[in-house]
Image: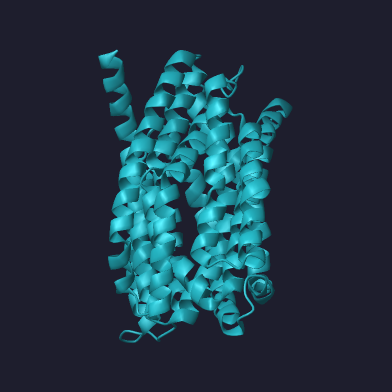
Length: 450
């Protein structure tokens, strides 16, 4: 048993550490990006926060397709079925590109109308629309990066996405410095400069992913060739998984966007405060993203080989790591919140609101992390995406959205109480997920006869 646990931890570290490091880099340059934009004032902060919510809707929807690719590739790779790896990658890549266009085209042509849904402040709306129009061009390279990253992580090559992320982070920071403030020959473009820097950084990251993909293929470590057609059985298998997870992620993110609309209509100060918490929320949850991604790969590989007991034991280990780690980090966050807000040049009221929101976030961090590992990793590794769809719909739409609307517009509570109360839906989702987990109905070998 000790030898088995040792192997589990070694495998976890191999997969999770590069992904966690990538997330830390990502959150770090989101933080630096926020600090730089934060020097432009409250309107720019609110504008970047509003546009990032719609961008997030695109990101999580595409990540849903990438998640299906990862689930399938992990099981096929674990059972050494190369044809299944190839089909899973390309079929999901094509689907992700089609989904991406549904977000990119409206963002290019009607960004003002989209941002008008989030706020009544015209200055914040115009700032957000300009940012969204530029950043939408980065949706294409971002989609390529996400699908390639899903492939590399599923074959336990997590270091490659890390390399791309480090390069992207460096370019984004340098681009922000020159284009936001106008250094040397570069004009001061403000918030639009931040969008242009992100666009170039994502293009560079996508090129790195494609380079390594071609290199691995030539070295015969991968056996990829573009799929033009798939069998009916392959299409059915993918769509039975992708449709629930696509609906799931889209509706969950739509719920998050409704939350943003609630915050935005409570006032520009409230929206600015919520935006300032974004980098820390991304960092503290993201520290466990490696565990969630590792769950898909590790458990998926075991399910692909019909090792159900081992898959269950591994799942329990990963959940314990997530729970106790998030409790510890929640305490750290609560203690550091008052110091964090001093970085930004914003009004005293905005700083106070930000601290209270971070206190609220620290109390529900454990539930957010455990849900990410359980719903985003363990349960999905068996391909039962319809289960996670039902759980997330109950959490977001039966509890979260109604609680947010009532507390904000009926009881008129401050934004930090609104955030805390609607975030309790995470606890509801976790309770339901634990029941599903213990019943083991999520365990399934998806590799079939491919």
